[in-house]
Amino acid sequence: MTQWQEQLKKYALLSLKIGINLQKGQDLVIRATVDAKDFVREVVRAAYTEGAKNVFVDWDDQQITRIKYDLAPMEAFKEFPMWLAKGYEEMAAAGASFLSIISPNPELLKGVDPEKISLAQQTGGKAMKPFSKYTKSGKARWSIVAVPTKEWAAKVFPDLDEEKGVAELWEKIFYITRVDTEDPVESWKKHNEALHRRVDFLNEKQFQSLHYTAPGTDLTIELPDGHLWKGGSMVNPDGITFTPNIPTEEVFCAPKKLGVNGRVKSTKPLNYGGQLIEGMSFVFENGRIVDYSAESGIDILKKLVETDEGSHYLGEIALVPYDSPISNTNLLFYNTLFDENASCHLAIGAAYPMNLKDATDLNDEELEARGVNTSITHVDFMIGSAELNIDGVTKDGETIALFRNGNWVV
Image 1 (cartoon, helix red, strand yellow):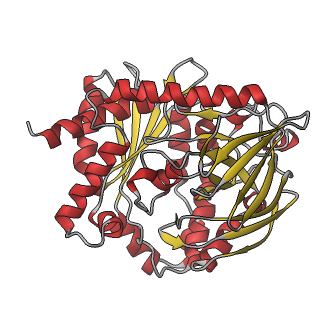
Image 2 (spheres, rainbow, N blue to C red; image 1 turned 90 degrees about the vertical axis):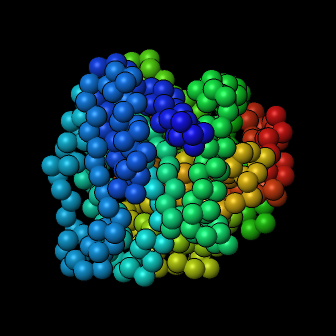
């Protein structure tokens, strides 16, 4: 067996043991594109070996997706297969775990009518909302891992030929996800412990607000009463740990919906719905986006902000040190899973109920009453850099430096 094959097996096992923490006798649902078929088969083989009862694979073909956007009528994007949405909800209620294996093509929908993309996002978000409550609350264990495509590799490494580009991207993924260590599972346990120490510090302080400053950014974000920082592995109601994102370098929380004021400028492009938005800036007043701009992709950004009422507000704040494995590659991955874990970021849209004490069973109205945002969307955008400073302000007015020049101080 080659070293390459050995690392793929380690990656598959990592996604099952650390990602979703598959239990014997449990059902597993895998969402993947046909581009990742070889790795998917490796994961399925490992899942049954680890004791899975059933493994269901929900396939997608990105070329077919593009064909639909090019040729289908606008009405097609107002509909969603409810049998699929209800199936996911029923599987979550029955205790299944969910693994997404993404194979990005950063320019899949380049040139597509933004109205179609917006409609598809809204329609899918509404249909899948009952299922998403299971994942946002942490009741269903879920995780995301990534597999290279030639299109993705060409975007990240434009100077390499196709074969070398894909190989280089695999190497970077193995490094970033700690698969290249002797025991990736043990490496991740130690990494999660380090993230939990950050979480414990922030939860102990219970900051009233955070103040961000950087070129183009002067933003104050208040935190709701009873907020809970999370990061790394999490624990579901049955006491089973899981790690939603592989890789992850963040600790995150929900902002107070009406407590965001100031200006913020993005530091990395956002790939949204297969199209790139670059050079974004936002102005907030009492939590709401009152002005925004972009150097490119403004039409796509407009559709994102206007998805629903909740998409005019923030649902997540995340702290990521500039000195971290993904950031230290000095690469732009054109994919949120990687770029958000190389940079402090914010998210437009829904907050995670897990970021509030005793909130996982609350409905939207109850969450809003607790001071956090609800929406059918949740989209991260990156704001971190080597010039970002963040201060935490306690309820008694003490200011504590958290980040200086992009990295943790405390």
